[in-house]
Length: 447
Ligand SMILES: O=C(O)C(=O)C[C@]1(C(=O)O)C=C[C@@H](O)C=C1
Image: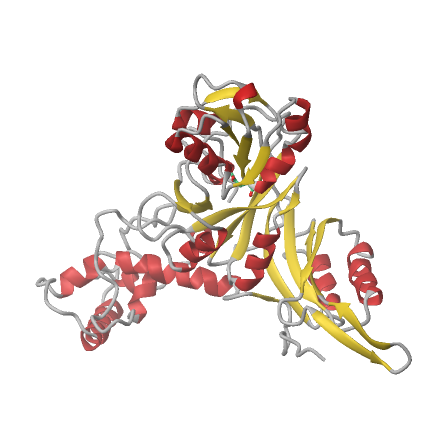
């Protein structure tokens, strides 16, 4: 009998902090920048160490002055993005390694001792959506090197972001967890190649939240060094998904080539170029050809014109689900019961509420991949155990979604909410060759 990982109600939990806590932490972090002017008023010698007792004294002074005075605040409202002022580089800890923040830290950006300064300001929508705390462009981790489709997906999800290449999917997860990046954008499924299983497994292993999705039309090209002709080729290398997406076309082109897997499509192009491989082609984007000085031998070689990869955006904090636009929710669960009846019940919890499912995926159960079923008559049978991933078309702000999950938790041994996020509704036609990187002129962000 597996231990239920969700014990006391509510069992359906976001993986780290609930949305309100998430909003609170964003507010605290932003406010540390706002504190600098207050500190310089209280201690003109800002180079001197400023300890916890000082903070408490400062807060007491501020509160007593606030209580005694009258008048209105002339403060500027926080910036819509919530970003801290660029010039504010005050350290946020007390020198002891702890990020102690005085109560006044949550009072917003105040620069004077007027009475309103110390009253808590109301939460605004910008407080509820975590933004970069380093005052610069959003840093978005992706797997691959420049020219990879994941880089283009990062640019579609977050125009004008700073895309950070990572050599493995796991590194992109860690980059967000360690605050090196603000978001990760990772492929989760492709319309031809199917699920990217590694990322399903990593979603469970890590504690990040899905905060959005983007669907990217993927347009593959066959790339080789300038002057190389198709007849010279003995090998083609690319990401396994890209090789799978072009399998039929490679045969149709009459290429007698071995297939070799590479970490990412653009990495394969870079390898062909940097090693001067004249017998090898890479499958990658037209942008990769440009970046690495390769020629395009064939354009649009994916087996189907509509070749789309769905990427998910991951963050340390969940977003607040809404109902003013189409939302999707992703969950993962496991059960102890005998096979189909539990699955049937889970599906009916959605069906009876008219909630459409858009994806079901199963992966081996991480802690218990096999269950032995002892039966005296037929010996010991082995059942495979699975984790089930489901995406459904509803927001967690909707009662029907909350009720469906409340019901599902009754007959599952484990249930985790991976995220409730806006559905990518941007229209796309047949794939074009411009899998472009992040750029300030790109279309609007989805998050
Ligand atoms: O190699 C890349 O360029 C990637 O971004 C990875 C990836 C994938 O993992 O599926 C993304 C989109 C394409 O479907 C092919 C490869």
